Amino acid sequence: MTKEVETVLDTSKELRRGDRFSFSCVPQKECFTQCCYDLTLILMPYDIYRLKKALNMDSKSFLEQYTSVHVGPGTGVPVVTVKMEGAYLKCPFLEEGKGCKVYEDRPGACRTYPLARIAERNGETGEIDEYFYVVRESDCKGFKDGHEWTVQEWIDHEGLSDYIEMNDLFSELIQAKNRAGVGQLTADQIEIFYMGCYDLDSFRRYFLEGPNLDRYMEDPETIKRLEADDLELFKYGMTWVKKKLFEGGGSCFACGIGQGS
Ligand code: SF4
Ligand code: SF4
Image 1 (cartoon, rainbow, N blue to C red):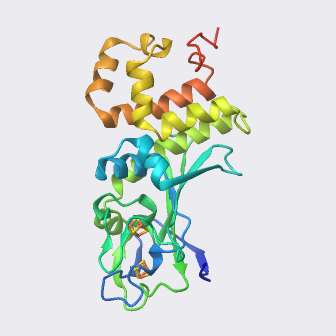
Image 2 (image 1 turned 135 degrees about the vertical axis):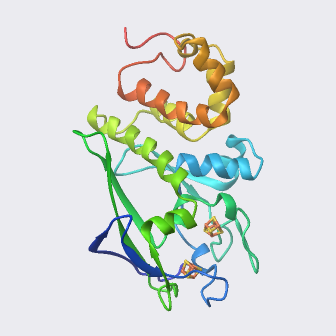
């Protein structure tokens, strides 16, 4: 069963962090949690990192139980989405009558709405240029009698800063792919990308515990840091994918023999 919802991106105004918009999403709204049904909820790497920790699950089990994967037609890389449940296509993290059971660790997309962030690193300054658009879903009552926010206030209120920082690292990986002129990935490359970006626990087992040359090419201090800190390992996973697939470095995934030589 699918619903007819029109999503409109208001591109008439580019909002910067100090600009204002009006919105209010509270349990008293008649539409409360209706947006948690029948949606395409894309999970970014950091969303998976937060959710699997919140649910105290191994990343591989989390991905198998809650997600589907397809190759993005635009990016050519694996894209992970949440598998909706039942006839009404409910988000599996919604407890009906209660709300989001992973609220503290809900995905960035759930936090960002009703904004959409457009960001790009400036090639000359190295700074990130960003702006925001307002997104309107036709059945969302949040714009009626909305509270007024600046974009920065919304970012703070929704706990978005960490998500923005991590998503920008992921965007840099995609930009590196584009710079390298790589189109569709091969099956082996997809496996590397998927593990390095989305499946942290498998990456830990492969990189820190398994026989591979990549680990021995890193200095011992880096390895100690990665062993001690999951978030560092998570960030390193994306760097590893970038080096291995798009910057000509790394070694063969299957046998550990150097490709770059
Ligand atoms: S106001 Fe909009 S975002 Fe909030 S619950 Fe209603 S439909 Fe969802
Ligand atoms: S993760 Fe939570 S907020 Fe986001 S769609 Fe699912 S139930 Fe709703």
